[in-house]
Image (cartoon, one colour):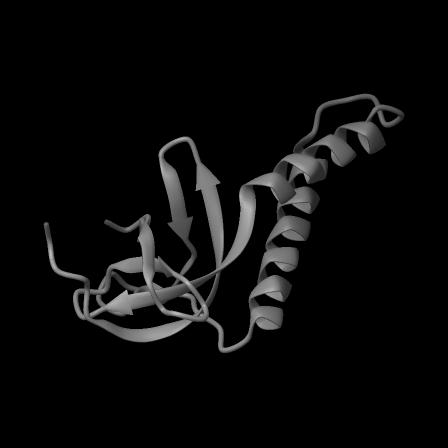
Length: 118
């Protein structure tokens, strides 16, 4: 059994659920400065989640090749799908930069969260 990771940073993050598992959003401009996007409050992370969903829907509506009358129903379905796949979780980052879901009260590690850059 492996030892628990040494968590050096905690906070709230917007997480995407995929068929391959959970992924954390990243910030940074180069591979050297890329790190998980973590917020101090749950409200900030929820705001990031909402902005991401709105941006995805805006891009989707511009690219959708459908009858304008069908667009509202299609957008409602797409929003429901995004809201189902986007979550806000309390996370911790260990000394290696790996991300883990944590219990926000006990800080117990619940499981790993992947980074798209690894």
